[in-house]
Image 1 (tube, rainbow, N blue to C red):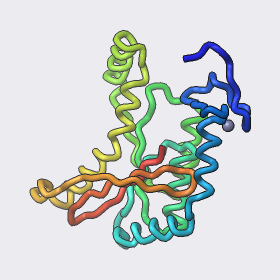
Image 2: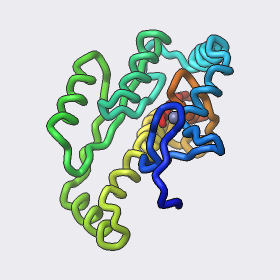
Image 3: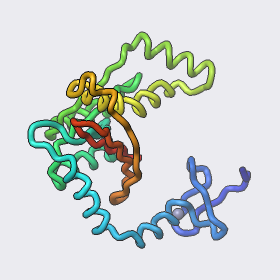
Length: 203
Ligand SMILES: [Zn+2]
């Protein structure tokens, strides 16, 4: 890594920003991606997304699981799914080890705006031990939380599928495809069983 400070020639993003990469013209990766997005056929992408949802729509139950902790990304996906695509989302989140007041407020506001939410609140005694161990061993005290939010949605989906399937659970297979809509990258996991659900991850 160079010790010389560098700025994007278009947006002035500095090289101290995490994960920033510059091309030979000193244009940052965000500006390069902004150019690529102009070439994408967004109406066609929207049609693809609608067709995908059509295959999973249910009238009597949830038909999509969305990870949402009250931030802008998950809230936006949940809102689009419910109001623009007519889906019935079940939102899922895991509480962080130290929740801030504003974080709590954001999540409550999200739920109060008309969404069903499963909030996993892990055993704090175990959470503390895991965070301390990761801090001592790897200097990553948030690692247990990162693992939890990365896996909770698949866990919930599999458990919901299990309720409907019981012994048929053995037939469940999981695969993923990439899907893009607007500024958000959505990764779709299709639980291939009689109780079909789709899961949208935003990154
Ligand atoms: Zn830039």
